[in-house]
Structure formats: structure tokens, C-alpha cells
Image 1 (tube, rainbow, N blue to C red):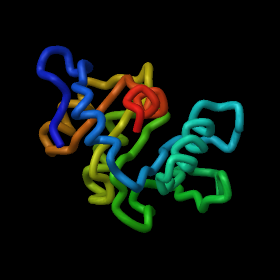
Image 2: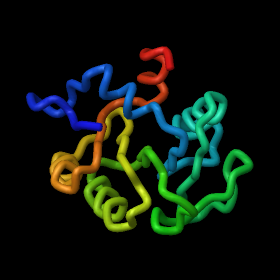
Image 3: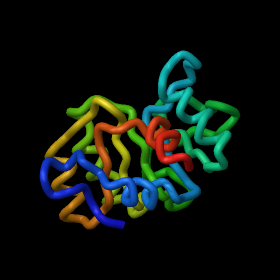
Amino acid sequence: MGYAQEDDGHNYQDSFLKSFLNVKNIAILGLSSDKTKPSYEIAEYLLAHGYTIFPIHPKAKEILGLKVYAHIHELPCCVDILNVFRKSEAIFDIAQEAIESGKVKSIWVQLGIQNTQALMLCKKAHMPYVEDRCILLEHKRLCL
């Protein structure tokens, strides 16, 4: 799996996004137990489409009937994608933790969230990275 196009880092080829989404295990960092939040809706959608979801939230114990992990390093297995719902300024530290944990194969940062330092860190670590894209919208658009 490669990285973003070289021009601005946000023009992802459809083939790249398809390969990114052709996985099974997705950890969702910042998954909310609030049914009105986008993270909850996206987790429901991904579950309905056959993905195995691992919620990560520092305070919750269970979301969508799933055990919640407080931190990335607590995940019970290596996940294919770490889908992140956090503010842009938190992304670099999250990417660093994901790389150091050895439990994350790639990072997907949701629509409206960008962090150039995290992008560069992931490139250096050879960790595929997508930012400023909604995983649900892209999954639907690509008819996966």
C-alpha cells in the first residue's frame, strides 16, 4: 500500500483508497457512545459492512456492545486501520503512539482533520496514511 499523491497529499487515487479499505479490523480512536455523533454512525456502518471494530476511548467501557480499549497499546491484536476522530493538533502524538505500539498498520484521519507533521512521520515510518477524508463516504463512493 502506498501513500498520497505527491502534489498536496490529499488527492488519493481510488485504487489506493480501495486497497486501504480492503481490510477487516478497524480501531476507532475517539469513538463516542453518543448515537448522534459521526463516530458512532460510522462505527455502526462499518460493523454492518463486515468490519471488526475495536473502540478506543479513555473513559468508556462498552460502545455498540463492544469492549472499549483506553489506549492504542491495549488493543488485543494488530489492526489494519486506526480511524481517528480527534482534533488536528492531537494527530501527531496519536500517529507516534500508533507507530511505536506496533499494533497499527495504517491511519485514517477523518474529514476536516489534517496534520502535516503526522503525515510526514507516517511517510518516514512507511505507514500508510489518509487524512481529511470520511471513511464512510469513501466506502460508499467506491461501492465497497
